[in-house]
Amino acid sequence: MQNKKKRALVTGSSRGIGRAIAISLAMDGYEVLVHCAGNRTKAEETRKTIEEMGGSSSILQADLCEMESVKQLAKEMGDVDVLVLNASLQIRKAWAEIPLEECYAQLNCNFVASMLLIQAAVPHMKEQKWGRIVTIGSVQEAKPHPDMLVYAASKAAQTNMMHSLSLQLAADGITVNNVAPGVIYTDRNMEALSDEEYAKQVTASIPVGFYGTPEDCAGMVSLLCSEQGRYITGQSIYVDGGKSVQ
Image (tube, rainbow, N blue to C red; front, side, top):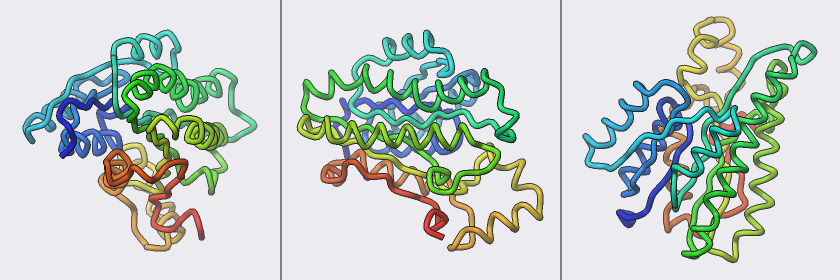
C-alpha cells in the first residue's frame, strides 16, 4: 500500500479509463482528486465507489479547453504526488473540414492543459524528491485515424513532451511516462462500435482479437505510480492488444 498521505489527481476521471485509474490508485492508498469537466453526477459516482471501497477522494471541476479554468484547477489541486493526465477531447471530422476553433479546443485540452498542470505539480515533487507523472496517450500516435487528425497529433505532441520532461526531471526522483491505450470499450467508443461492420473491421485490426477494458489501462498506470515502477521513465507503453505493431 502507498503512504496514505500521498495525493493523486486524475483528470477526466468521472468515467471510462480515468475512472478506472482513479479507483485503482485509491486502492493503492492514494487520496484521489476526481476531476470532471461538466458531469458532476458521474464524478460523484466515482467518488462514492472509491469511498465504499475504503478509499479517500474529493472532486474538482474544470473545463480543460479553457485556459483560465485550467489555471484555477492548478490552484485548487494543491500539492499532488501523482499527476495522471487522462482527460482529452476527440472530434471526428475529415481533415479538410476541421474548423480552427475545434483545432484549438483539442490542442488546449490534450496538450496545453497537460503542460500547465505539470508546471503546477512539479515544484512540490521536486521538493520531496519523489513524483509520478503519467500522460494517457493513444494508439493513434502510431496508427492515426484519418478522421482524427488533430486528436492524433495532440497525443503525439503530449508524448514528445513526456520524453523531454523525463530527462529533465529524472534527477529529482520524478518519473514521467505515457500509457497509450488501443481500442478500449468505453462510452466514447460505444456508438461507433455498435455498427456491426465497423466493429468487425476494428476487431480484425487487433492482434489479440478483442477490445480492451479501462481496467487494462489502470493496471499499467498503477505500476508506473508505485515504488515497483521507480526504474521506468521516459517510456510510452502501448496497452492495445498489439494494434500499434501490426
